[in-house]
Image (cartoon, rainbow, N blue to C red; front, side):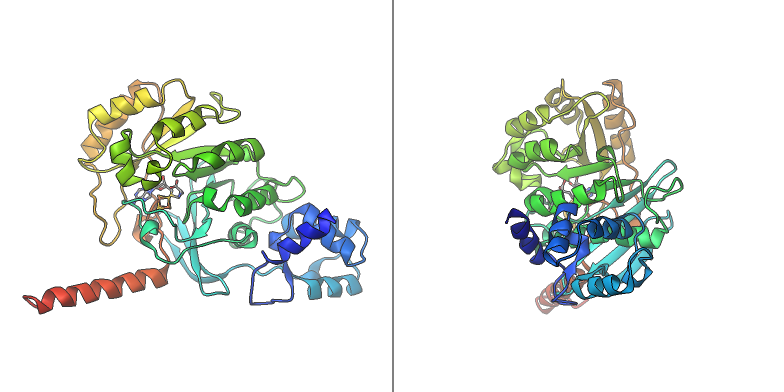
Length: 390
Ligand code: SAH
Ligand code: SF4
């Protein structure tokens, strides 16, 4: 009964609209898949065969599943889909960063970014369309349309990237995607169930087999879900700190009004499995004249004292109409030097893909951007009607 219940709840999660009668295999955990297979009157081992084709070999056609007889392949094709999210645009930055704009069957959009480095390739994935939070320096936070992404829409971003990067079969030594960060659009801990399921799928040893040490979840500080993520998933935790006084953090990261700094820091101190090898990453966006003084730096070091930590200073990435300026290079260097002296290594994050608006906090779907531009134009017209035309 339990299996059936979980299988039918999955039906609601499948990518809607394109093949409404078929379940998306991208949203099914191994146990869910087994339940569906058994319910269809097939032997359990078919689930395992299917799982490996999907998650180890990345197949998108049932016809290519060579150890399945034709009747089974045909039955699977009527039951399931392996569709990836549709790609509306694909942009490549001069630094090798790739940004995909994805469009889901209901017309909503989200973005995924691949960032190649010397020693790794990181995929930055989205957990929501837009974000309900309204951090004042973040472009995503200005987007009106918001909904959670389904499990299939989250795993679909990983599969799509692996398809395009030529990363199948999963786990091959020269793979390009080695790490995942949940730092795209949305607050992952507001979509905990789907994010958790999607991460369990990509971590599964029979499939992509990504280690939990290679996954980092970034949160603005949804305190009740932090302990859960630690206990259930064991992934690395990054906290969007950005301010070390409640008064300022209330303004920059408004969820601070609900879960203020002392509560947040406590939750982090108790994050399971923390050690020198497994530290919390504190993200700190450098905003000119707002949070970048020496006093702020000293307060930051004091706040996190005793917690195994990495500090990640993020130069503010501007977006059209953003209300802040990035701190000067000198200021960032001085701040970083103080952090370095306190014993934290290489603290400044190099902005990547700025030229294609793919850097932290710049993500916002194109349709929303166009809407924003229209409002901008309308505002310009209003201003013009009251005075000089431009
Ligand atoms: N919602 C989650 C994850 C997505 S944001 C969170 O807030 O943690 C990923 C990181 O980019 C966060 O640290 C976020 O605060 C930061 N960020 C947002 N807008 C930015 C901007 N314009 N410039 C630099 N970093 C930004
Ligand atoms: Fe949402 Fe994170 Fe942007 Fe804040 S910084 S608005 S939580 S995506």
